[in-house]
Length: 236
Image 1: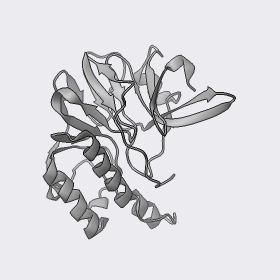
Image 2: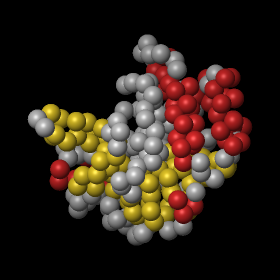
Image 3: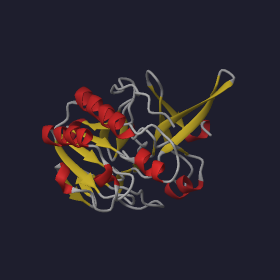
Image 4: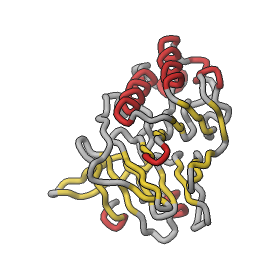
């Protein structure tokens, strides 16, 4: 786990299409939807550091500040009219009480600067309204449903979800490169976790087999300078 600042920047080489809607991945793990001027973020997990500290893990208590700085940077690049948070914005129910006053002020400045919509997650089923914005279980954005947990199987809905923190590895020039990634097919996109201490789950793990039963999907890996697209057959 690392709290170092990640790069920001909308991809110039790659866009993602779900139900014909253009989606532009950002190096930070955010996703911009030009047709709706919306920036989508998944799994901030604010106050994860303080949660782990309560259970004996000694980590720098600055993950919330770093994640909010990263969010502010992504917003400054995309300049959206709407910010949509796909759940698990706080790591647990108590995170909304533990957050530092300076971080509350920064979060509130963000929600006042852009229309903000919070989707409930499994870690934060009741996002706190005092930080601004509106709260929903799911949001419909054009042809897409935005939700926290991805549905399983083929299904009929087109959706964008978070929850699983996808990551992928690929062999390049004799070495293995591992990155957070977007994972998707023509119907469904699973976003990487945005938070500083969130980590990643391999797209080869069992939960992804239930989401992409055909085994055929693409990943958009987040490198240091560019987004790299690979078919699932190339990654591990």
